[in-house]
Image (cartoon, rainbow, N blue to C red; front, side):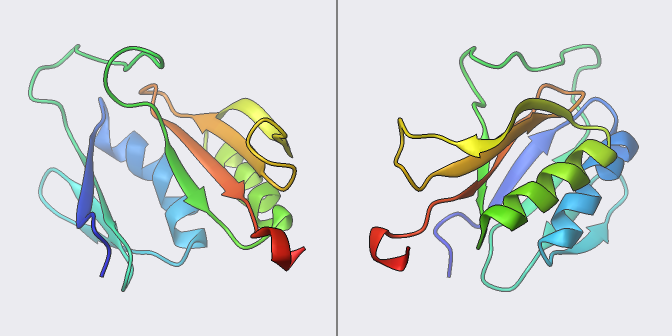
Length: 134
């Protein structure tokens, strides 16, 4: 059982959020459940992700680097999977912040990309195998 049960993210436009998040989360094997004003994606053994509308209109977008949300990293099984998810995100309207590459400041095995949606929500796709798995 994951320590984090769910992660709620507020977005300006839930239908637009669905269009951006759904292709990525489906590619990761998550199922989607729609509610009246929100949507969630779930997968057995994983943390549920929920998108919901703001309580106050006009309070977005989030600005990366300010207090609050930084980014959410999705650990995947290969560099090819990082590349694939990065391409899926771009096709769904995300903006590339950093294209897929090795990040030696983290480790010589750390391969990742970063994308950001219309709300300033940033996610990372990363592959960092254990040293003995090379």
